[in-house]
Image (cartoon, rainbow over all chains, first blue to last red):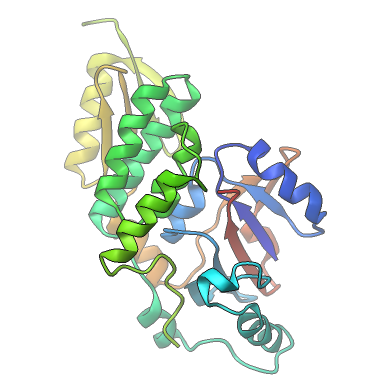
Length: 186
Length: 94
């Protein structure tokens, strides 16, 4: 297992990592390297990668516990059972054609949003907070489905990512008929 | 203004160049199909990676390699774990 915290700084992720005392690599991604490479638009996102370095389960939503089950409707046991069977060799992962069919690939607009995020993130670290916020806002307008941008940049814009502005954003998104989490359809 | 410094962030690395050169680099990247964010007031540009390049890599099903630090700043690469099944988990404090 490799975990990656998509956070503005190592310090934001530190309490969780120190509490979990992981024996696996537990990494920090402040510049959205992983989001860009794998087209991540929200967390948690999991992928299965086999011994040959091939993606055998594309971006999926799965939780390790049932802490948020009352909100998400997703049970941890579903993914954990499938994962154990795959790791033990009792079940194969998805065939390549199925992986490709389930993959979501980035559009030009998604990548433009990531460039705006990248500039904003750099400006933020130069102390150019207001300029950074303009680029984060632009990125969010370009990719309204990308919550690594819309919610993930809230701590860099002085907004509580669990607070009323998040709930308002989420409410509008869901009301418009869009899912916040998109688990694989299978 | 000639001589004014301009920051070009390319491949995640920031380099300072002359403003004329920075703007030219941004235009060239855009012309080649890359996503480009520019802030002339802040004199900085970010050159991203095209959707076509990312989509091609993902649909090859070869897991894109990355190198990221842990809490102690030690770098880890996905490719170092070749030969093992990997559960890759992205999460966040938010």
